[in-house]
Image (cartoon, rainbow, N blue to C red; front, top):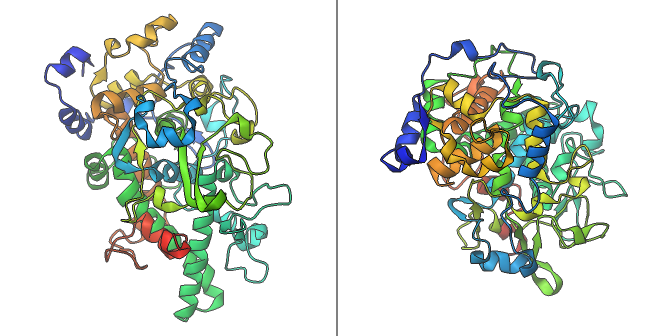
Length: 508
């Protein structure tokens, strides 16, 4: 396929056509598909040259590209405060609403990411070999970020008096993850305490598991089997949500259905070798950073006088505070809980929309707290970190990935803003930014599009199909069995209700 220029797009190549082509890519690309590796390590989906040489000039260009106040910065007027940026969206014209996602989509996507990929060893802009770089998460959707190694291997995650149940503590009013005296969360993946919303989601899954244990015991399941059976039910219902709710939102219903029905074309490791590709981990799946809003309403009644708690996702003023003014994790206080009616649609009119997937990143993400960075070191600009990671993994350009997939390539005239850096990024674009541009240019930011959508869909489906314990492997015709609004279905609102963290359980 030739390059897709803005002129050709506006001349009749519609977003619908782009989606249709993305669903039927060329199959004549077997020679670029990388060999499989081990699930314990990362690997490459494609054997393609890097987008650029790792030189000081390129590193300087990438830092300028992702700098605060640069072309990626949405330039949110933070002086207006967290409430006005929500109630007056016209103040942040670069952060457009996505009418088909709720605010919770971002954080469910983050929770899933922490479930199947965690790179603790590589360093930004220092080349690493994926096949020799450990992935400290199991590359399956098996909730090891919740269960750890199980009650025997990680007993600190479980109740002392009842090893079938996970530890849950209180924040003074509502549930919290268990914590040490210094506030550090006692959970299998420390990243699930990066911000208040992801921490609340972790606590919800802890309660979800415990309530499934209670349900099974009431049905007569013996104690020597109850943990294993509860774990299977929790994981399968979670996998159902990923397949039927989250994935279609992220990549579009058409591509999700096409990959599930007609199979994977580009990511086809053998069973037992379902590695995590660096093209996904280091670039494409980081599109979720574009969906983060500068501020959120955490709950409706948690702040002083029973008023809503509004806060920026991160705010330097929160550094060192016992009860921070922002939504960073690592703290316990009465107002630091999540009112889920803001994030998922319970039908009460309180849900808020997500941000579109585009090439603008909310301003607070250009100054992360070091505690929100797994390695604990700068740079604190999340876009800079994303871009420099392309040099770590020697990632190919977005154009090369699209060409390898037989999907229309976005031409250099779609990236005029990148010419200023003087290193050819407009024609050989970092894969993360290319993925954002595809979503913005081809799909108006509603979902991923083009090669990014296909790549993300194939990795998700592979991680389920190649896991011998997933419901897609064991029983593809399985249907959810826990209580839900619609028989045979199960969504995030059903999980939150069953976990008893929903608005009705809190009197909100």
